Structures are given as C-alpha cells and as structure tokens.
Length: 381
Image (cartoon, rainbow, N blue to C red):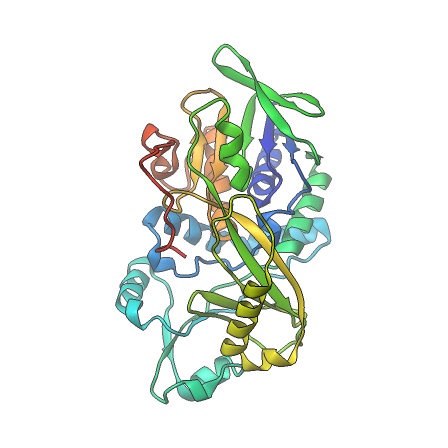
C-alpha cells in the first residue's frame, strides 16, 4: 500500500488525508501542536472570498469548485463523525462597495454569481438587525444569497474524528525536524519523536510551511498574517445574514453567537490579542448591528493566516526534491479554496485528471523565493 506523510493537521492537511485514505492510501499526519487548532480553528468559516472580484481567476476557480462541493462534503463529515459542522446558507450582504460596484458586477456576470441589489423593505426583511437610519431610502445594498458558512471549530473537530475512524494516524505534538533523503528522493520525515518513512510527503503546515522548507530547499514566500477576532454571546435572530462592511464581517451562528472579524497584522508568529483591537472590533460590530451592544463579548482570539505573494496557494511537487509536495499559502481563504486545492493536489499524487488547470499553482522557479518581491495583500482582503 502506498504511504504518504502529511505535515500539518489543519483543514488543508486533514481534507487531503480524507481524500487519500478513501483512495486506499495509508496516511500519517504529523502535527506540531493539536489537530485543527491554528488558523483552521480561528477563522470565520465563510465559504467565499470576502470580496471575490479582488482575486485572480486561479483563486476564483478553486472557490467555485469548493462552493459546489461543500454541502455534500459537510453532510458526509457530519454523518461519519457524529459532530455537526453547522453549515448554514446564510447569504452575504455587502453594505458599502460603491467604489467597486462596476468591477463587482462585471466579475459576477463573468463567473455567473447571483448578486442582487436590495433596498427598503426588501433589505429590512433580509436583515432586520441593520441600522436602517444610516441608509438612504433609495440606497442599494448588494446581496449574494447562495453564500454559506461553516463553524470552524466544529468542522476541524468533526474532521479529526472522521479521520480517526477512517484509520488515519495523527501524531500530535510532534515536531518535524528534517527530511530523510536518499539520493534525490525524499523517503520520510525525521521528528523529535523519531523517524517516519513514506513514499511521498506533503507539507501543509499553513503559515509555518515555508519556515520548514527553507532550511534545505528553495521555499516560496509564505508569511504569517495575524487576524484578531471576537465573538458575542448573543441570541438566535439578532443577526440573520453574514454582513460585510469596510473590511469587517459579522457572522451569525446557529446558537445565536455572533463572530466579528478581523484584522490584518504582519507581526511574525505573534498571536497576542490587544485591548485596542478589542475596542475597535466591538465598535465596528455595533456600527453594523446596533443590537450587539446589548450582549457581552465572550472571547477574543487571534490566528495566523498563511499569506502568499498574490493570494494564490502553492500546490504541487517541489522542483528540487522528488516526492515532496506542498499545499500552502491560502491566505484568508483556507476554507473556501481548501477543498478544491486538496483535490487538485491529490489528483497530482494519484496521477488523476486535474479538476482545474494546475499550472497557476505549481512551484515553478518564478514562484519560489525571490527577494525582489514582497507580500502585498492589501488589494485582496
């Protein structure tokens, strides 16, 4: 039986493992911490890029494939884990995109998205929680009703349980130290708990991926981008839809909790939360949904997104070492494009026809480290 090691037990590593083990591959996941406890746990779970028209076609192609296949996958995970990831097709409201409206409309037509203008009573019926005193009577808000969301902590718990039932070995609190190389081929991974041998190795370590690779090989530039978030302990019905305004989003959960996020901070691997960001996020939440001022903030946290040069993930075999593969650099879109990126990588590993054209995601010389390039994701938030 073919054996594959995956470094990283986030959503990318675990979704890859699911596909491989269902294809008859023996899979071991090596995780430096605990499965699903980094950015996969910390995110908002929106199954869409926030402003999809700001991204290039390679990101859009992965997102659309994932949006089509997620409902079926999440039901499979629920049935086989006993844990509900709480998928909701809540739709997404854009409150203030006037400056980008024409670009958004052209993108929507090109990619066949439902993108509807709403105002007045129609808007009030879609999201009663908005502050309607701030809207002109004839001002339109734009609504994408098909967008869904999933509750990240429940999704990663469910995935971990499902994988264990499928026979995947998850080595938690195990640090990958170096690669085991014979000739020009990778044969396994040396960890602080011993050696693990396999036919192929996949690095899916999120923001830590490049740091592991660059010790021995050319590595793509993947930087940790911190995002601080908060959650209100509210009640069902306070918010009905995902609402996006000025780069901040409000996400309603099934039990009434409301998530508000998130910041973009370049602070290396620091996950410290700060009081000034807490104050700013609370203000933004209450600006978007005034009723939230009546509910306490239950928790504040931070996660580290794996930011790539252009927001396009790296998916494929490393050109310098046979049998070493990478699936990382998804920035803040790990959930929405993760499902398709994992399928695309598995297509390569198993020699199957690719679901999308793989070339834009490969680890070409042009996409490996180039000191003249800097990560700039300000236009793709």
